[in-house]
Amino acid sequence: MTRHRPAGPFLVAVILLVSLDLTAKWWAVNHLAGGSRSLPGPVDLQLSYNTGIAFGLVSDLPSSILVVLTAAALTGVVHLWRTKQAPTGPAILFVAGGAANVVDRIEGAGVVDMLHTGWWPTFNIADVLITTGLAWWLIATLLAPDPQDEDSPTDFDGTKAQAKP
Image (tube, rainbow, N blue to C red; front, side, top):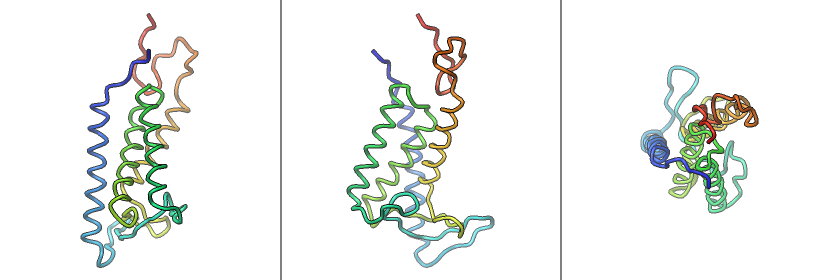
């Protein structure tokens, strides 16, 4: 029988990050409708809506299909995390970003984007969470010790490995 990780801290982190993203989107809708705002540095604030997924891909698909596909992906990641097949930090970022975009997609006419560079498609905090989570997961996977190596000092998510009984 596989022992599952406790879900409480995971859920609290996801809820906090979803709240951060949805608050930023609420602010953008209420303060950027009249035009963009220039910020010092490479990112400006500009309101836009994305009816597709990353970079506007598959924007012709109905929103309900995108919600179902995203929910299935998030369910899969949570299952992998609970069964200790996914590292905690990346899973939290990926699930929080995906969940925030699902909530936003259900609420309106697409996902609210507000971070604009001029050389990259406009994006939001949830997109940063998803991208960072996937990159971190990839790096953690590539750097993970070989599970066949019994001298390995850490398990997949970097915590000390338990001695086998």
